[in-house]
Image (cartoon, rainbow, N blue to C red):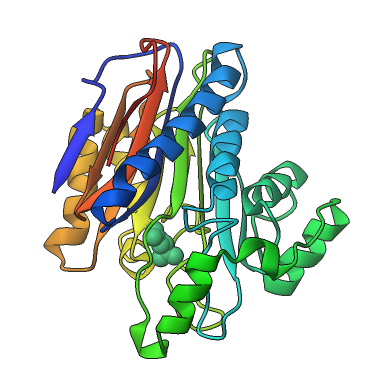
Length: 302
Ligand code: ASP
């Protein structure tokens, strides 16, 4: 297990992202960390200008969805039928407002649709056809699968078979704290490679893949959805922060929950209400980056 933090230092504003728990080949590690750094740079501009944590996490995840190295938006992995079924969620710690979509057919930025669900406020989670109808009503245009399925993903699909169903890695997520002390979290994924059509993981489930509460902090999880959902990973971690556990320790405890029960691989990033961030993973890699009012440039790693 690997854990880290910004030394528990509070910050006026802070954004931290992950690019998925997994086992990246050596040559992909640095590029993934750079992709994460680009996302925190974009979100950091919003926060430095006094913008909202909610807008910052949405933007960070959009940047990662548009980066085809990651398993979210463009570059997301495929179901056993070779189709895209996308999951995303976003939560605002100020009033616990949440929005999510699951099994969404191709749309360029699933996180923007999750944000529209949050803003709309009537429901929290829309699935498949209903999610697609909601998105179109809100002015989002469906994307053609060819624009979102990258040659690398197509090649992996063609090499594999259904028995090769696997946890794909490279899911993306973000947490932030803004100058007004509000926190937010967002997560987006294509799920697991060769998943059955209709399979939904932790990412769009509030309390499993994503959670935010101004009184305690914000968290985004990655790893095997079937493990993360069993322990309600982000909500469990936020409760540790609520009871005063420092961020790095809370991150370690979170992934220990998965490890101790032998449930599956995972990782998490989190921020507390004072702008201190932490992360942990049980996997070989989890690309990440963080930027705060204390830093001149993004910290990053894998
Ligand atoms: N948690 C995601 C899922 O199970 C996958 C991942 O984080 O890589 O759908």
